[in-house]
Amino acid sequence: MRSFFKTVAIVTVFSLSEKFLGFLYRIYLSRTIGAEGIGLYQVALSVFALLFTICCSGTPITVSRLMTKYKAQNDQTRVYKIITAGLCLTLLLSIPVCILAILFGQNLNFLFADERCVNIFKIIMPGLIFTSVYAVLRGVFWGNKDFLPYSIIELLEEICMIVSGIILISFASDVYQGAFRAGVAVLISYIFSFSLATAVFFIRKNKLKNPKSEFKPLLSSSIPITAMRTANSLANSLISVILPIRLISAGYTNSQAMSAFGATVGQAIPLLCTPTSLISSFTLVLVPEISENYYRKKYNSLKMDIEKALKFTVFLTCIFIPVFTVCGSEIGITVFGGHECGSYLSASAFMMLFMSLSAITTSMLNSMGKENKTLIYYIISEAFMLLAVLILPKFCGIFSLLIGYTFIYGITTVLNLILLGKCCPQKPEYIKFTLISVLLCIPTAIIGFMIEKLIIANLGIFFTLIICSIIMCVFHFGLYLGFGLISVNFIKGKIKSHTPRLKKA
Image 1 (cartoon, one colour):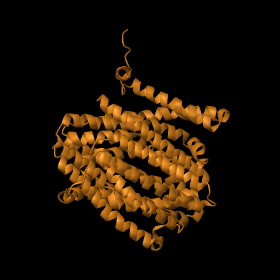
Image 2 (spheres, helix red, strand yellow; image 1 turned 90 degrees about the horizontal axis):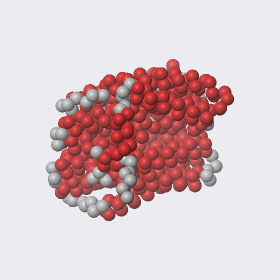
Image 3 (cartoon, helix red, strand yellow; image 1 turned 90 degrees about the vertical axis):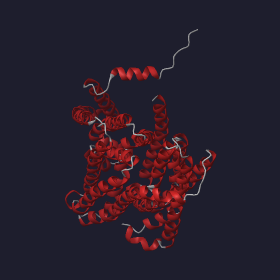
Image 4 (spheres, one colour; image 1 turned 180 degrees about the vertical axis):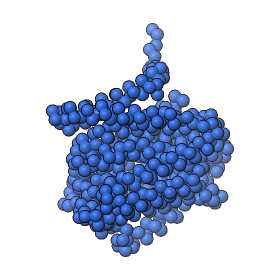
């Protein structure tokens, strides 16, 4: 258990560093190319993400899961075969798609709300091959529980993109050129991470074997995941086209529509993903454990792992909900220099709970071979998302997108939790903890609003944000202790277990 938490801690440090740097870079982009530039950049990336998803999105997690399964069966030869099958399948798909997209990119104008996005998309496209292969290598690292190289490469990739982006964008003359050069930086980072991961793959003495016998199990498991993520990317691409059009029909100008889209997708949504990003390192280490316990039929350990994951997710996310609800405006102004993003944060703060639970439950179910079910659940929720974007802009403008996201994550979360209960013979206990955690957000938010009104006129936006956030976090944590959701003795035990003992003289 101590080894598990040590691994989580290491991965978390690297993950937080990567996310923090990415956060700073997004602020830089907002300050240099603005919401309109981010909108162009984000639309191009959404179409690229669709093609990437089609090529390999289900392959890495499938390679990782099957590696875990074969290792549990002590069959190392099949481990090497499934790795090779994953790499071959990815190359067979990504190379033709990349060539076709580059050659016929000008005929893809219908995919973009703004024709300026086409050239940004085309400059990123060569990175499809590199990042697809890297994605499979990343799955290999997960399957080997070799998290340190993966964490280091992810961090270095982010640094590479940021350094390249700042250098290139600093010489941009307008918004479009800045967005285009941000795309070039993405391509450079993909080539960098591919090169580094390939070197580490062979240094770690991984081998390639004849993959013929493994294509069928790979495809049968990866296709549902790829289909689900393709539906997600396709929906995002459709939304990037449909939503600006629907906003314009509701009275927005073209520039206003792209700015609103950039402020939500490029600014607010990444901030709302903060708890999910923080939980990702915990999920990364835990999911192979869940997969192994499931296949070895260690149901008591499986129950404990699921409970641990769900309670940690709820606890961490519920700390953020009151802060974003109360201080959304302050966060938007401090980070991006505008109120627009902040209003979206405050209005959709509770959605973070569904976002986090949806992400972790989907990962757990996929690790147990329930890819077909998670695909069906996602298609159901995505249909509600598209309906919201088509119908609601006339009534609530850009907030229709946030309502649609709530449909996706909320429906998926509920259906995933029901299925998890069926997959685990010993039922996980988390409902009471979740309900109390959600209710505790209410008094915390009330305290936060009171403090904000008292001090903002005298201390200003930045210090109000800091003081309110700290007080709400401390107060919320105190409520957890008061209601017995967190044990004081457990905390003391953890502190003592990680405190080095002094040797006697």
